[in-house]
Image (cartoon, rainbow, N blue to C red; front, side, top):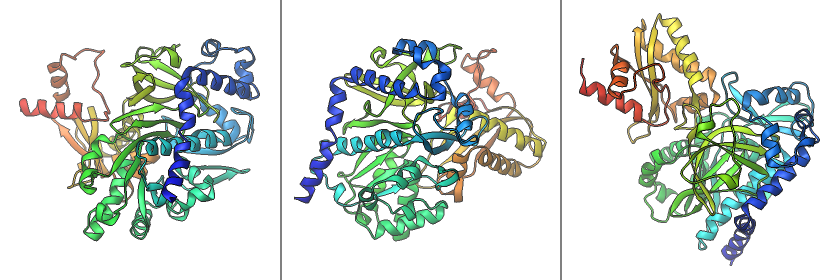
Amino acid sequence: MVRKIAYSILSSYYKPVGKFLENPIGVQQKTFGYLLRHGRNTFFGQEKGFDNVSSPDDFRKQIPISAYEDLRPYLDKIIRDKQQNVLWDTPVKWFAMSSGTTEDKSKYIPVTKESLWNCHYRCGYHLLAMYAVHYPATSFMLGKSLVLGGSRQINAIGDGVFTGDISAILISNLPFWAKRARTPEKIALIPDWEAKLQKLADYALQSDIRSLAGVPSWMLVLLKKMAADTGKSISDLLPKLEVFFHGGVSFIPFEEQYRKLIPSDKMHYWETYNASEGFFGVQFTPDSKDMLLLLDNEVYYEFLPMGEWDKENPEALSLDEVQTGVQYALIISTSGGLWRYKIGDTIEFTSTNPYLFRITGRTKQFINAFGEELIVDNADRALKNACLHTSARITEYTAAPVYFSEAHNGAHEWLIEFENPPSDIGQFVDLLDENLKKLNSDYEAKRSHDLSLSKPLVRALPKNTFYGWMKSRERTGGQNKVPKLSNDRKYVDGILDFMASNPS
């Protein structure tokens, strides 16, 4: 009876989903009007002339697409100058910290009470409902959820304004009944990863854990620790475990290891798309990882086709204009105070009835296999510093992830062609690692205690290797460039195969 009541409550959260499934474009138009009304009262809205905007077409023509660097002056008004009504017309009391840009180690994404409750939490209910509707016999809501969040605790930065991981912000503001159903806050917000993992493992072994939530790479570290400490499988340790709600990085590199750790045909894996900027998608059916674009979350979406990414005045499309099989950069306007904000993720629609999509990558080269969000600027600056202190000079480089295996943790493999090799390769690797930590807070967190990400693996290549490889691919010439970072091993393995086939 208790299970039936819980299921009834969960499935009721599916009703709003049904409404925007029936009229997705109408819901988006309503969201646009709502955001515009609030935006007109802000410094940003007055500066950009929101009073003269009456349609999505006006919006596109009058308001430029922005990146974090464009947002930063407005954030300074809130954080440094203590102003409000800058980007949104209710107070901004929270800033979610996420991986930094070329100038900042961390980004500060505004979180308002509206975006917190009507985007992040509301879509969390949709997530639970979507799963429960497909598995009516589920009982995960009768037990505990083991949640593995970020590493940044809540920090006050003055006048009732706070920063932290989005996971820390969500945990801190949860209603009492929701906190009781998940990892205790005093454990979830421990900043030291090694201490947190031990506490989480101890807690899990003493609790009725029926669901997991978090990033696949870190959750794998925790589960492996539990299995190693006890000598038992996770299925034996957590006999009522039935679902892992995961997101943040691709699940593909980790899926095989999860199925080995949890050898149960009753275990389910459910994809989510929840970022610091908002909660945007949830897996729609059990037999596909395609996610439903969530439309009642106070987010107005636009989509930038690949051919527009590098243009000075790119033209974005509204939801009713998108097509399947096309790469789009996601542009969002939200009740968190983001306006035509280029989040950096790329997606591809697999259906427009309903609107289903897959995350396909980022608009720029990057490595995010373990949630580290390493960008080229981080890599260039870290390598430059390592060269400076080891008398090295680099001709070319590329890097890619080395995925988790039963024998080792993940890592980054760097293929580097030196004009002058470093005086001490070990020192070079250490300097590269330390500088990446300084430049990128997410990389620093994942490297903590070697738990998720091991020290970089650097392979020095013979001179002219990159040229020979590019020539073999008919990619020589000024417009053809070696990809510096990649989130898969296509290029790194290609170069290694080329070297094996063409020994010097």
